[in-house]
Length: 262
Length: 262
Image (cartoon, rainbow over all chains, first blue to last red):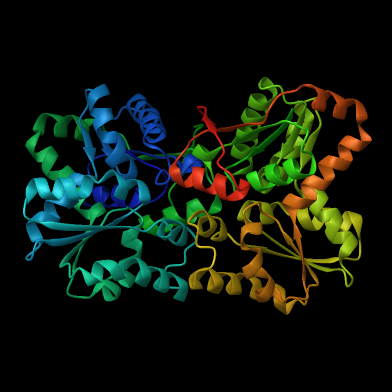
């Protein structure tokens, strides 16, 4: 199975994108709702929780781990690679490669949680792919709670977005990476506020494309993942009505969420 | 020692108020920063974490437990009382007694997290003290992230507050309980938006007054707590710069925060 974990429900946008591109691959998803958000926690704590999540997914039969959480990808993916033998795919690599490739002017913006921005990993990866790129980052810590409240088109959300995006607008970027799995839900508000000519890179979609091409490059693994004949399962460390509603919204259908302790 | 726990830093407003009213009582504080916020979690998870926190404080020598977190007080205090023999004081009782006592018209408003409001405990307690009272509740889930971002006087914070307080304003309340330990930090913005004639009940201050009178009623315990000769200690399950800054802001001095795993 393809194992996917996230600090909460946001990673379901990644699970959904993978499901659409790889419909014959069963997924096992774990959302650490009880301990969400990771974005404001210290690296040590994020690493510790990410190890817990990986152990859980491996015990469920995962043979490939997708770290759908940007905060965990930026602070814990290398630590996971050092401790586990299964492939660990982080959500940052696909989005940064695409941004480096698509930007015309090389002026690229990143928005993410405080932890993601502080890690500096997006600029680092983009510059590794395109050394002359100018990368500008902006932490947007209030967007996750706004999305989780369902305030997807409220005036306050628009004002807060305008405040966050203003400094990037001044930098005249031509490409903006949505460096958090919650942000695709705000895409329609972000476009006009950053400028409609700016290309938005959705890390969920890029991740799914990357998983598909990774499996094409690893046919043995692909075959094993496909022939197991299991169906997708979704686990969460806490389950509330708001979580169920968000899951249904992302998948466009109701999803059974199995609770586990974390 | 007086043991105090909260889901995060907000409970430090309670610790600070107790410190000021009972300066000769050493405190042991635990803030479960790694797993904050509790307000959006399920009752089972909140109870499980509250038991962990209580065990930790007892192991540190606490002989009295103050549940400084409104979400934990509303969903876990009774479960704690059933499992432990030390006195468990919740942050709701003092504020609801005061509101019932001070309101002239009996029209009382409550603001809190989603979990606190959903528990229905504030209206229940107020009506127990004053059966004819009309109690109106409003969940304000974005206020905690706004306070934690330090957006204490931003235009967006004012707009969001206006939106949250508007329904209570229409109810013509004369008393408003700030049912979350973060909210006292927004008192200056809340006053003019709910109407300056409305009395604000600060649950942190009421809690400290209650602890003092509880100890006056229990002189043996008071003597034991006082004569132990220890100094106050502060523990957190995660520590970031933002947490240190908030602690310093609340206490008006820098506070040493000892990290523990949770």
